[in-house]
Image (cartoon, rainbow, N blue to C red; front, side, top):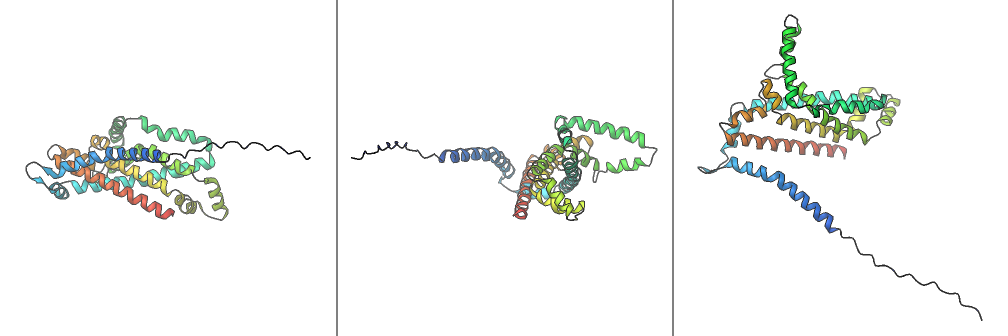
Length: 286
């Protein structure tokens, strides 16, 4: 008789309980709902304050009056002009410097990071006090020289370039972080070496190789700069200029509904520009 080979016992299968995928989605929905309430409820309350009056009831007169208010359009156009000049100048300063450090001197990256983020620890009131003293001392020193006219031109009321220089310092940490995040997602050295080996010049490399790969980072840096310039009050007020934020505070005492309507309109314009910039960057990247 042939011996039968023993059969190994079949191990009992442990029932696997399906993962509950509803909880993360539920918590995500709760967090998004709370965030939406946190941002939208004050905005809705501000909007209701501008359109409702106990005497006249529901009326959109403050928004119609806003466009004809004295100083509204000049201050708004001034703020947009300052924002555009600040965006161009800060990108021209930071982007080539960051690429140069990454390619030629990577050991200087910590030093550059400290320098670019240093304005975060300097209060704007301290910065504007130093700028004011420097302008006063510079006017006294440069009065007998031809540079005095240049110093006066920097402080022109129609378009004060001194505000652009101060805003560049204020937005430098945010622009640096945005560009640094974009540069970390791409191999800058390989792209630059490949383009240079194919005969591309440095301006061609910057405009046709680096910039297209940084659309999202550049859009984020531009939006942060725009938001800061539109809402900045301390520096412009102390230096004696009247961009949009200073104009809103100026009329707030006499016309409360009008100033709140201007603030709501400014916020909506900022959101609209954000959606336009983000949508344009997505379409180009696709």
